[in-house]
Structures are given as structure tokens and as C-alpha cells.
Image (cartoon, rainbow, N blue to C red; front, side, top):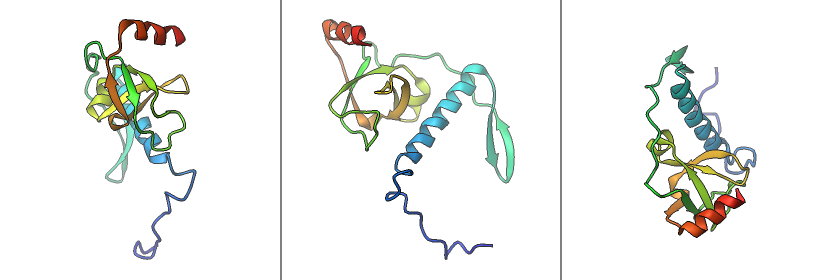
Length: 137
């Protein structure tokens, strides 16, 4: 058995493979909970030394984050390769992500992913700008 006092602290920040792992795990957990709610199945977790299936509450009706707000300006990306600072991204309504302090964004990969809300500022765009962004999608 290993004594926890002698085990060195992992050097997560220096390991390039680990830099985005925590954020990716958080996004994966949010997506798993969302899918479980949507399709009415459980989530398999390890709890109190046992593998158990938990059933999240029924999915709530998806609401818009703010009526009319559909875009966000990226102000921070914490080295995420799929976000560019000073770029406008489309926001996808997601109550589960909102409850976790996150936004669902269509990022540079073209897919929607959950990111911390602190990475963005929600913006209201003129209709002409919205139409132009939708044509480029």
C-alpha cells in the first residue's frame, strides 16, 4: 500500500496532455447528465466503494438564456484550441450548462461544447449582423 504522504503531487500544469483534461472531463460530465435527462436513463458512477446507476431529474424544458441573446464574445480561452479570443460565437440554449455556470457554444470545431460562462460576454447583435453570421454557419 502506498503512503499518500510520500506520493508527489502530479505536475498537471507542466504536462501538455493534462492541461485541458480537467475542463474536458467537466464538459463530458455535463453532457452525460444532459443526455441522461433527455433520454430518461441513468448515469453509472462510483459511489461509496460501489458502482451504481443514478437517475437525474427529468429533463427540464430548454429555455433561451436571454430572449434575443444568441451570441457571445470570447474574452478568455485558457489555452483552448477551439476558442479564439475576440471572436463571436453562437450560444445554444442549455439549462443544464447554465445551472453549472457554463454556456453551450458552437466552437471552432463546428460542434457545440460547454465552456465556463466567464470565458464570454453575451452580446446583442443587430439583425443584419445575426443574418450575416447565420449565412456563414
